[in-house]
Amino acid sequence: MKTGEDVLLLKSVGEIASENPEKIGVFKKYGVDFCCGGSKTLQDVCEESGIDRILIVDELKNYSVAENDDNYSLSKKAKDWDVNFLIDYIVNIHHTFLRVHIPEAEDYVEKIANVHGKGHPELLKIRGLFNKMSQAMFLHLDKEEKGLLTDIKAGKTENIKQEIEDALYYHEYVGHILKEMLFLSSGYSVPKDACASYKHAYELLKNISDDIMIHVHMENNILFKKI
Ligand SMILES: [Fe+2]
Ligand SMILES: [Fe+2]
Image (cartoon, rainbow, N blue to C red; front, top):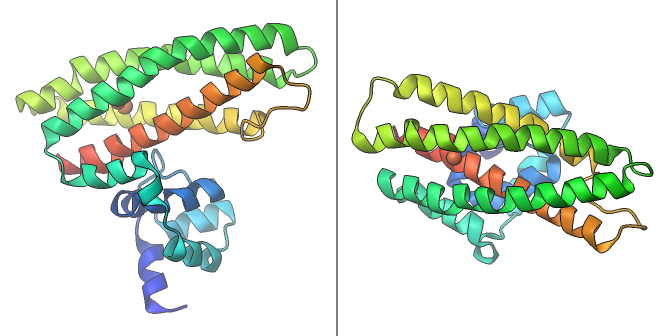
């Protein structure tokens, strides 16, 4: 293995994702958790998940889609943003996205679980997991906005360490649920007999999952690293 490849393996996956968000596509392909599990080194992730390190390092070096993806190019710029602006962005874009789209997805998931749950029992499990995550998510968004994010803006440091620990804990909890839902839905691929609601529900769940990954990445790997 060349020296350059060793350097990449010793970096944390969160660091790689925040320095080069265009590489996130490779992490998604290999199922690497770069947001909540971002503190692990690439080498450790490869060992734990049985990923071929030469293959992934090679792909990481040659992959580039940043120009075509607004989310990734924005999260690249976010590294240089002022902390207050970054917080406003997270709240106005990501928290708002979840507040709007989670209730919509809940309705659709409820509908398809009722109609197709017998033939596709995984939908019943997905409904249970999604409802659990949604409830916790709304509490988390409020808690972050009233606690951690307000305290950072006001320069109140006494509770910040604990508030960041709480947020990290919750992000990890959500990460586990998202992974399980991804597995149960086979990566949100709809079965052949799927109706329009089924397709729409999976599309919503996939968008929510993608948005949470970027949102948590911005908090864990960019915002929390700045303070
Ligand atoms: Fe957040
Ligand atoms: Fe959060």
